[in-house]
Structure formats: structure tokens, C-alpha cells
Image 1 (cartoon, helix red, strand yellow):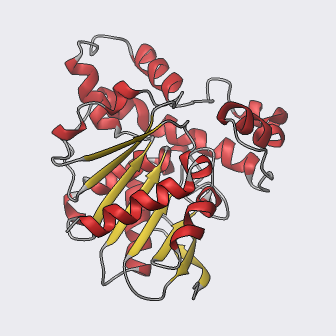
Image 2: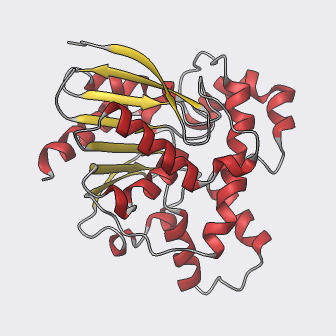
Length: 289
């Protein structure tokens, strides 16, 4: 039974405000969900509905999305600032207990930053990653494959194609109609029923472009050695058109004991397969120390 549903505003280290939801049990294991691009926290509605009777659940709109504030420049979307945001969220809402971190798409890309941060060891108990590899790990893979001599433009193009990057067309695409048509576009590319359009879809699409611009090239060109600080579960959508299988290969180097689970599904697993996702998260939480 759901016992809480509280919207909380959390101040960031650079003077913004993050909007978070706390749901489910008032005590017990805590899950933190981080959404991707061009989504907001509502992408998790179906998964949360299946887990809120067993867990305390935190989800938040990342900066620039949903009801959260947006930084004034691209610089404000750097991974270091996203890490600071996450720390503020868990320090505010789960100060005395570790959390099971779950990320999808760009939520997973930034969650890799959290789950490989030595200063957070003991604060994250588990990490479930979906359709969003670490930029550092991809950078190392490119070097190992002999691709380090490619130009920044080539590296960027390769990533944007694989990760559904719309900034090549710019914010104008969203302003000229994509925001209004997004539910239909999503339904067509994912084979899902058309959903209701969120009131912040235009804002989510335009602002989220800065996640790519602030982070992709620096991390691909200068990758760091980032090792997981907690057990990692990788959920693979085998029909994902945006995050190809080769981007998820070799992660055991960075996450020893990584648990890999696959399903014949497309990119937006939280929308297409919420029950499967909920089961895998719960099983992983129960099985891991």
C-alpha cells in the first residue's frame, strides 16, 4: 500500500532548485530513479506503480527537465554538476541509508558517474543501468578499437547516431512541432500506444540537448578510469536502435561481477516493459549483499 507521495524542492550547489517525488513506504530499502532524454520523472510512472508497495522510492526531474530549474548555460549541465545534484538528493532524502540507483538513457549515463565516484562508496548499494553506458567507458573502448585518431567531429557523429541525439537539428526542431508530436513519434519508433504529451515536453527537449554538448566530447576524448563502487545490473534491450550492443560490451572490466539481463525490446524499457524491469530491480536488490 502506498503510504506517501510528497513533492520536495531541493536546492543545488549552484543556486537552482530540483523537483523530487518521494513515494511508497516510509521506511525500508530506497530506490532512486534518474530519467533520460527527452523525458522527465514521469517516464518511471509504470515501474514505480509496481514497486511502491515494497520500497521507498525517490525520483527527480534532472536540471532543465520537468519542474526543475534550468542552468543559464551549457556549462551547468556538466557531469560534475549532475553528480553534485545527485548528492544533494540523497543527502536530503536518504541521509542515513544507501540507495539502489536506477538510470535509463541519459539518466544512466550520469548514473555511471555517480556509481563510479569513490566519495559515494557506501552511499549506493546497487546500480541498475538501462540503455546508457558511461562516456568514459566508451572513450576507452574507442581507443582500444584504434579509433582515437578520428576527428572530434567523427567521434561526435558516431555517438549522436547511437544515442538518439537531436541537437544536430537544434532546438528549432522541438519548437517547430516535435514537442507537440513527440507522443506519436515515440509510439511509432517504439511500437507503443500513443501517450499524453507532457506540458514540459518542449522545455525537456530543448534543454536536454545541453547534456550532450557539455559532456560527450570531453569524456570521449579524455576518458577516465571509472570503476563501479557497488554491484551493477545491466538491463539490455536487444532491439534498441539508439544504444547498440557494442556500446555495452566489456563492461565487466569496470564492474566486476556485473549481472547482465536481456529482453527483446526497444529503447524505452520503462514504458514498454515496466513489469519486467520492476521484477529485475527487485530480484537484484534482494540477491545482492
